[in-house]
Each structure stands twice: as C-alpha cells, then as structure tokens.
Image (tube, rainbow, N blue to C red; front, top):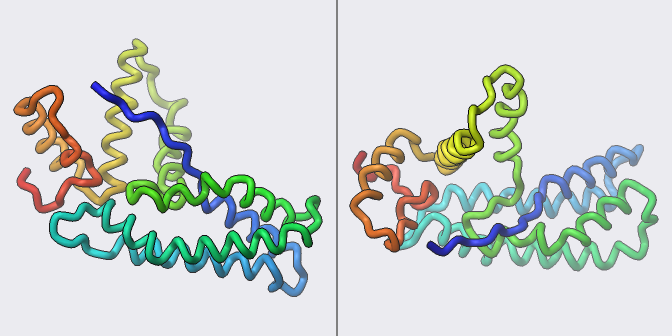
Amino acid sequence: MKTNSPTHVGCMAHSRRRFVDALKTRKKGGGPPEQALRFFEQLYRIERQARDKMPEANETQADCIHCFRQQHSLPVLNALKSWLDDIAPKVAPDTKLGDAVSYTLNQWDYLTRYISDGRMPIDNNILERDIRVFATGRKSWLFSDTADGAKASAVIYSLMLTCRACGVDPLIWLRRALTELPQRDDNADIGDLLPINFSKTSPA
C-alpha cells in the first residue's frame, strides 16, 4: 500500500506573533510592524471566508479552499513578500522587527505551502489546542502496556481530533467508515472516507 511522505508546513501564527512583539516595542505603535500585521489580517480574513464558502457540485471542501486561496491569498502573499524583501536591508537584525522579518523570510517556503493544498491549515493553532489536553493529562493517565497499544491509541486520538477539526461528528464518521471499509478491496481508493471529505449528510 502506497504511503505519502509528510509535508513540512510552517505556522503563520508564529510569524505574526513576532510582528506583534515588534509592535509592542514601539512607544507610539504603528510603523512597519503594523504594516505587516495588516497583511496577516487580510490572510486570516480570507481563511475565514474560505471555510464558509460552499463547494460546488463534485468539488470537495479542500478543492474549494484551494481555489479560493489561489485567487485571494496568493496576491496578498506576493505583496507581503515584496514588502519583506524591500524592508529587510533597512532593519537592524538584532531588533524584534529584524527577528520578525528574518524569520518570515527564512521560513517563507514553509509558511506559504498551505495555499498549495486545501487540506493544509494556515497555522497549527488547532493542533496545539487539541494536543494540550494530552500534554496536561499525561501525568494522570496510566501508561500503555505495549508499544502497539500506544500506537493504536495515537491513531484513534488523531482520527477523532481530525473529525472535530473538520466539523464532522466522530461517531457518525466512525460508523460509516467501519461499515464501508470491509466492503472495499485492499487497493481501493478510500479518500472519500477521510474526515475532510466526509459529508455531514452522509447516512450513518
């Protein structure tokens, strides 16, 4: 069975946070940090609009988001890149602003990779929030008896949280997936059963 290799995607929130810190160092505010934050504001507004957009017939939610990003996010990202390239030589590297500009430029390929695939998020805020329960609760939970048991738990956690991130009822998805999977060949395409492609209106 063919497996896809992981894709390294950057977190736009980490970049934005650096410009927020740079803005805090300015007594009167404004200036380049505020200019940068306007770009981020546009990008996140587009993300909200993309999530609310309804897919057309025979189009997945991921395809819909991808097309929307190509049309709206890409021009903003190009403008942000030009702005960063222009301001980089004018900023002292040992300042908060210099750190923000340097980080964003160095991570640019990773930070912008999300627009190439509608399944990829603009940042990892959802992931960080979802794994926080495991980080805070692990000392209270009994450890797994075996490595296989730990791996099975990790798979279940991942699937359930993916459903939640996609707005899919985990129980409805699980019933459908466990009903469909045994009826399909080992090499059959099961992409339609992935949580991100799973229709909320599908029969349980």
